[in-house]
Length: 95
Image 1 (tube, rainbow, N blue to C red):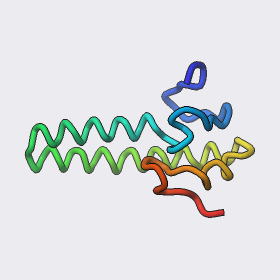
Image 2 (cartoon, rainbow, N blue to C red):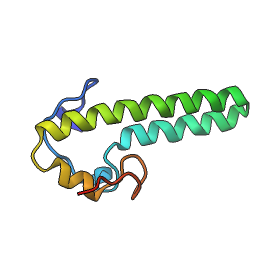
Image 3 (cartoon, helix red, strand yellow):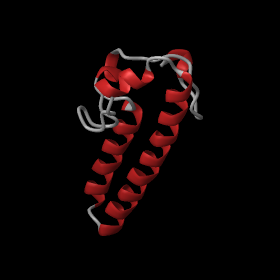
Image 4 (cartoon, helix red, strand yellow):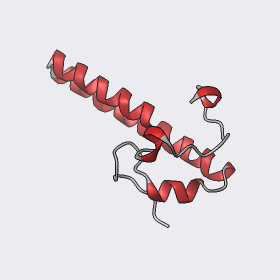
């Protein structure tokens, strides 16, 4: 991400290379996958409930970012129609 890394969403440029070719939020997808692995390792219902809460929070966060990026970046809507949100092929935007 180089200079595009930020804690708060900022519309700098559409990145469609590397892992961004298949998902719009690869960092969040990786975080959720790692957290799922940890929840499975712990193996309790509470661990899975915490993971589900993390999924809900990340979905909320991605929806907020999507609004910012769509509003400020020309071409983001077309990019979003081609790539999955967090899972390849899943969550492509219509039109």
